[in-house]
Image 1: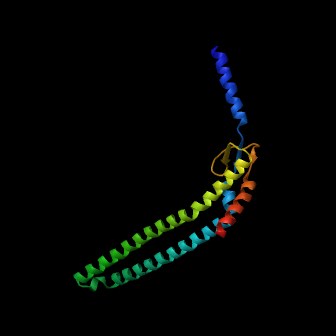
Image 2: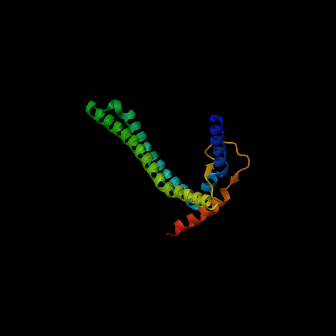
Image 3: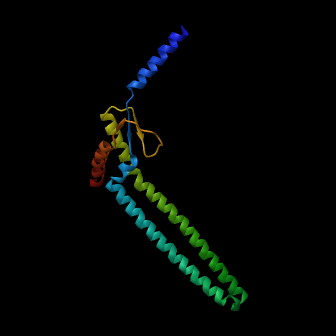
Length: 171
């Protein structure tokens, strides 16, 4: 009786597994085809370059002040020397603080730009998977798996994604 019950459970389990439809998609390829993602990357690059330029200016100002201090520091009265040292320390702290602020701003802006893009990718995958009545869609670019056969829906998702992406830029 136990064997019959076990056999029945296994048979039902294999039947359910056979009914599951699985496909895969290359999310990196999807992202690479999106004009809005390319625009977002360009915006992030511009912001990063601007931040780097700002930090370089602050670094140059610090180095110039440090050079002057090193040249004239021995000739300064102790009170002025201490004030100049404190000024240099504040400049260095400001540089480090600003670097942290810029990194955080870039991260926040990146998240703001990428969130709607990733939502459109998800929506396009959902549209195609519903159309094809798929139970599972695996992302081959983020998982190490072996694919033999199976349904690659990347190109169909790209089509949907470009439609969604174009619609979002018209708003």
